[in-house]
Image 1 (cartoon, rainbow, N blue to C red):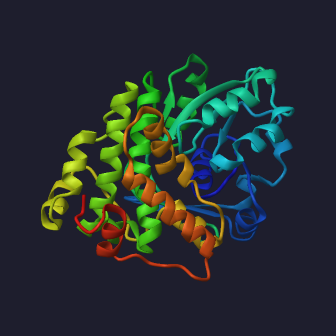
Image 2 (tube, rainbow, N blue to C red):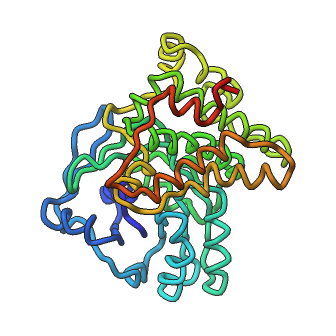
Image 3 (cartoon, one colour):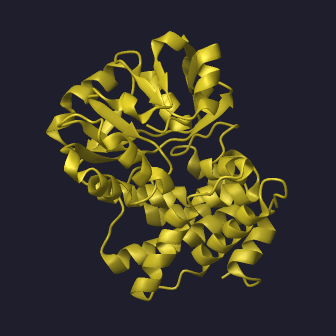
Length: 336
């Protein structure tokens, strides 16, 4: 539900062993009808599914009869998507949120409470880039995570047979807080106008990200949250690594980060298309928690302000911030 880059890639992979329906916008589905769906991943040959290997629809009613519904809409559309699919879901249907942010699972549960469905939290660690009208490539390393639940046993077996590794976690809340730390880079990539690899290759951009992550860790400590450790490097050590000189960072990141040259952030895509971004679910969430608990979050506040300005400017007048410009704007001339 909400098949974009993530939904098309995951759906295309699952179609090896399951009947899959992609529910999305015509702009996404029409090219698949014409060309089929091409799925790519590092180290694997391109797999092209003919259009008739999937069901394609823009009608939310097509979720009727599904055993599992993966929700991949933007956070702003969660409540409306739940309203659209609710009456069509069968009793006991498993609904998994694969969305950014901390609150979408709760929104789904609240919206679907009268429909007797099983809503679970999930998390997508990797990035997917659209490389053509109907082509999607997983562009970074990582796995799928989902809240541990007995209702998932059949789905996990189906996914494993399709080559989709899904890791059940009993600490999914900590996993989602860890993902939020990673997602704070979405805004930095969007403001830079660069690819993810280019942005991470420049220390000044990384220092902006490190400041946002450091504020987040302070907020997490105040609310009693310890983010999960998803990589060989702990969240606190990641902040230090981001601030390292470029040659040191490149060596340190080799073991924990693999990035496709074409990878960007979904926030950059939203800005380019003139769509609202998810900044309020990312740096905006940290800023709200900081205000509620008396923790200053100047870097996250500044990034929110710059994204709001970029949204107002529209896609026809994009500003690409250089690393030094963005560092000065976010951290001030003294760089914090």
